[in-house]
Image 1: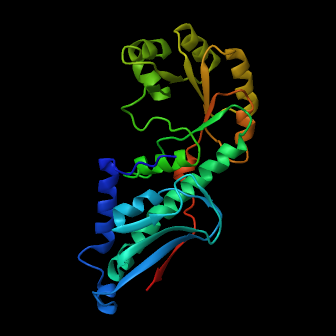
Image 2: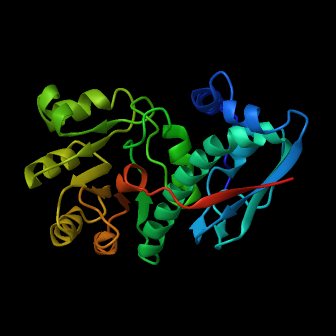
Image 3: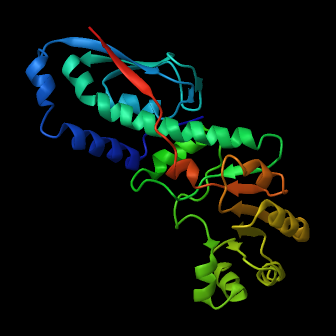
Length: 271
């Protein structure tokens, strides 16, 4: 997994995170720790996890060694990376580094659980735009590290016609005809009539939302390969395999980014 942290958005995110925490200076470390003291430190996993975001550490610290990469499975007490430098800097950057690693690792670990849950079905898991404002690029990279497929990054890079677009455009046909002038659209259909109209207009990518697995399976049998199908709405770890077994090409799940729990990592300073 390539976790490219050199995008300008990510560089700015790290800069702002450090400024937010350190501000005019870490007054505790300045009061307690000699300015000339140097130290090293290591990051450890404190529970089994799928790592994400460790490649951010060289943006935070001057000297780093990475023992693991994003997407790696790690065990409890396993060392992930080491850093070296002035002791004050290691201490003032500790919380920001852990905040990034814990949040992103939580997403990657949850994503891997979804991917494992549908193994062997041929269905792929998609992430969504339900991300923390300002952290979307990082959170989607973490989801990919866990093995899911990134859906569109934003409103600018793919056309997805949803129910409110259909209402505003004046119907399925009108929405599709206009959208096709800009690219190949995906469209959400809510009824069999909308499904038939979308297919008659040449739609090749359909989104079915808020169906039970039984309802979804019936619609997918009716579609019979005439378009790829994504299922969304109410997808959980407990039911994702049932949705995958309907024959859907994709299942999307916002929980991977909006409900992932930060995982337990630790930083240990060593003089």
